[in-house]
Image 1 (cartoon, one colour):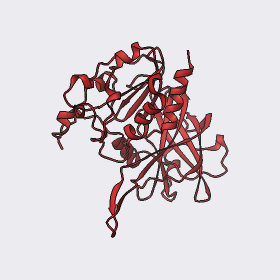
Image 2: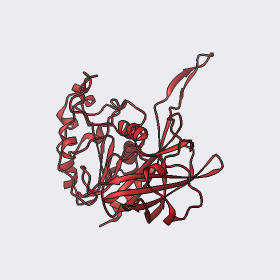
Image 3: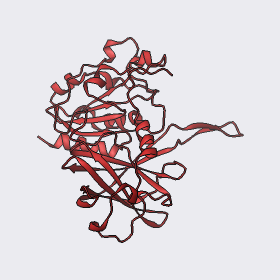
Length: 324
């Protein structure tokens, strides 16, 4: 497939991180001040589990940090229980200072199933693979190196993994509290076929009635999803439209504007060229999928990248409806 000016899929970010970033292994009873956050100290090839931060860009401010867990064969682990996160700033001597801790939310999306025929002629759909991340929203106070300590139970055993990551002064996409770019994406009224603005198996016309600019002007909270059901080529994109966006629309009805924007020019994508639509460039998005929740004033209240859950997005929508 020929790709021109490609948007980097969240899957590519995730897999690159899994292969290249330093991975922390099991910690024991080490006190917080005694933890060595140097790269060499964090590498343990015998740990059997590698945590990977799958948030593509991390910047100062309110940030959703999402972690995936891989086994030695690069398979995703989805059975971690009671996961919890502790965050440290790391100084020039690779020593950490505990800043905050929080429970990690388990976010899962189930991939498309495959049909299976029985000998009696009946058939049913086998559920697809489940993609799981462990996420928490944190206030990152300064740029530089940070450390993440993940604690969870797996197969009846308590585990502690550590991972270091870099925090930039900001990120390309709109920050929490920033006004949403007043995009005027293609709508259903602009095309002859809904398939040109929605590659879902069963497109929802209601998600293609308002531009971002028009939605903000209504004074209602707005949910904007940049996602492509058809051209999401790996399990890490996840069926966001089907399992998060449409259920949000079903749940909130006319209380909230819900918009779906295909990140690529659909006509050209069908020929093998992944060309970002103008809205992707206006929002400075370098991956997909993304979901943004806007308040009544059109400011970004919450943002979610990659794998997210209906519960996470709904909680942000509830906040947008409550805040005045």
